[in-house]
Length: 407
Image 1 (cartoon, one colour):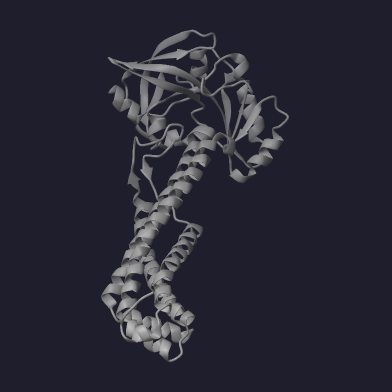
Image 2 (tube, helix red, strand yellow):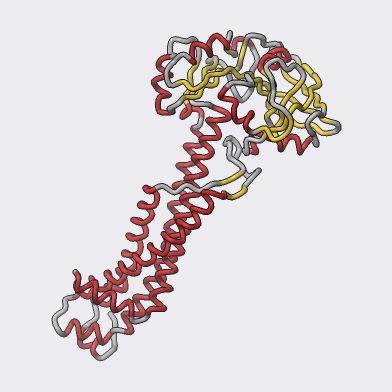
């Protein structure tokens, strides 16, 4: 084996420029694969965390008849006495926070501009609502007893040309099917760096949201955050005696999971295409080597080298080129992935329907993804190297010594 490596290394070194550019081509392809895998992984995890943080929580309690797509406000579709219920849930171990939320559909009107909005009543000081408190970029945060103030997202403020202190008319559906309209003052403008959420969500104190929708002492759902998301099943079992439907983060984010599976399937095809293109460079390099070293191959065969040994020699050369390409790809790929993992890529307003995707896209590369791509690259390039290796192994010694005929 050592002798094969020495000879293969010497052969590759005969034309260093060609060998370097062959390895570089493979390295660039491998670096591209690392970058794409890191973007897909980063985006899927970012979408899941954004959904948990802003929309689903780790657990939700709600009435079995509640339909979140319709934002029903009928009493039979709501959670009764939500504050007492959250006190009970908070007492459980591994529960980070539990808070009621009331959600209603509405229309926001400012001057001659209007927009359909999702009105969400929250407990301003609840730990689960930190994204809005920490995301405040202008004005002041809500207080529980505020009766004429609200928070709006930055994209919505820009659309309606609103500043802190401006007035906004809000028309909201009520529990009896009517529509109530009131004028509110923009207390503050927030940004969760999630365009789909910020462009459509208006935040009110829970008490005020209950009053305007005529749902006093009711909430649409109980939003629960856990210290460890893996404990969701255990906490869910502890709440099974309650007369409400309990959903965990996996059930509420099936679209994210399904999209990740679909993305991985399409990316696998993309990986194969990129590797096929880059592996063709290795094939061309080795085919040229076969033609250049025809007499040498004939001499090796004449002195007793068997076909499988000649084949092995060319596969060793393929392996060395592959190793060099992977090394170059790792250096380039990890550098680019490291940059985007820190600085990100701005993609605001490019989210998908049904998914909360952040304004910034960050990369995340795992060891398992890296190892998987390395294995795929090695297998594809070695398979590609079989053709020139077989071509060399099948040369007849007499014909090879004459510098002629390939079969």
